[in-house]
Length: 274
Image: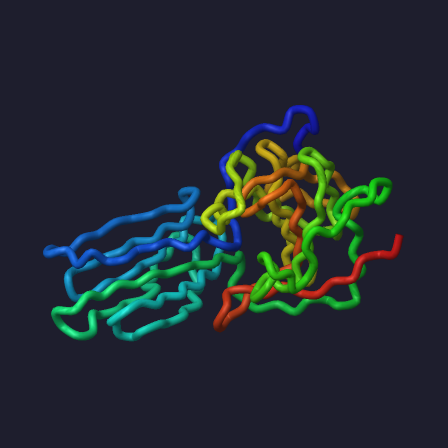
C-alpha cells in the first residue's frame, strides 16, 4: 500500500472503461494510409485506409486479457453499421472491423467508438452482497446522479452512482477484493464526452469476478498498488474532478464483462444502512 502522504505518480496500468468517441472520417486518400492511436500506451488502434475501404485493428498491450467493443457507423459504407465485441489476450492484435465504400464516386465517411473492460469471461454478480459506502459515513454526501441518470448513467452505465464531494475526500473500499488496475497521472477534466479517457480511477476485483470502479480521482490520488488486497473500509484513494466530470465527485459502479454486444454491464447494488 502507498503512503498516504507520499503517494507517488505512476503510469496508468489500466485504461478507463469508456474511450472517448473518435471522429475518424475518411478523406479518401489516393494512396493507402496507415495510422496508429494508442491510449495510455496499452490499447492501440491501427487504421488502414485507401480510397475505397477502411480497416481497423486493435492491439492489447496490457499484461492481462481484456475485451474491447467497437461500434462503427457511417454514410455510404458497407456494412452501414456494426458492433464487435473482441476478446484480446496480452500482446494480441485482431481486426475490429472492415468496411468498403458504397456507391462509387460519392462521398463516404465513418466514425467509431470503443469501450474496454478487463477479463474475457462473463460473470454473475452476487446479489446478496451488501456494500459499504465508498467514503466515511461520518460526513454525508449528496447523490448528484443516481442510476439511470440522464447525464451519463444510461446504457452500460445505468447502475452507476455519483456522490458530489470536495476534491481530496478520502475514498474507502466498498467491498474487499484485489486491486487490478488504476490511473493517477491525469489532471484533465471537463463536461464533454471527449474527456472520458482522461479520468483517474481504481479498479478492485471481487471474489465473484466483478470489478468495483472508483472514478474521477485527483492527480496522484491513488493510495494502493496493483496486486494489493484491500479490506472493506480501507482508504484507497482521494476524490477529484478528472475525466468526463462537470463538478468534483466520485463515480462508483460494479461491473462485469459481457461476451456479446456491449463489452460490459453494471449491476444494481445494495448499501449497508447507516
